Length: 198
Image (tube, rainbow, N blue to C red; front, top):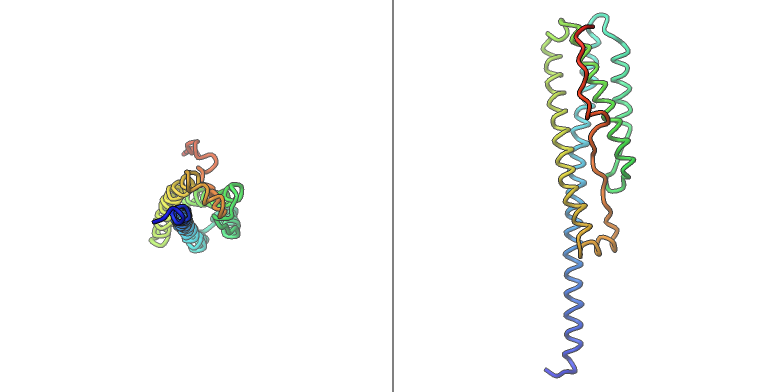
C-alpha cells in the first residue's frame, strides 16, 4: 500500500472509531434514560394504587357512627392534591420532584392520622373489610418505599454514567441531563410521637 493512501485511511479509520464510540455511548445513554423513566413509572403506579384505595377506605370509615369528619376531609383533600400533580422525571427539576414528593407525603400523613383515629372505633377495626383495606394500604406503602429505592438506584447509575468520561461528551452533545432523586420525606428523621393518654 502506498503512502498516498495510508494517511487518508488512518484518518478515515479514526473517524469511524469516533463514530462507533459516540453511537455506542448514545445508545447506552438512551437505554439508561428509559430505565429511569420505567422505574419512575413504577413509583407512580404504586402512588396511584394507594390513591385508588383511599375512596374505599374513606367510605368504609364513613360508616362508623360519629366518625371525625375533619379527618376524612383531610384525607380526601390530600388525595386530590397528590393526584393532581403529574411529573415527567426527564424534564422535572429538583423543586418539582420535591413538590410531587411533598404532596404524596401529605397523603401519607393524612392516612396515618386516619388509621390512628380509627383505633378509637373498635367496631370499625373489627370489620373484615376495614382490616383488608388496612393490610392493602400497608402493603402499598411498602411497595412505594421499594419503588422509590429502585428508582434512586437506577437513577444513580444513569447520573453517574452521564458524568463519566468519555460518555459525558456524548451526554453534553445530545442533551442528556441528570434527573433528581427522591429524598427522605420532611420530618422523617424524627420518630413519631405516640400518646396513649388521650
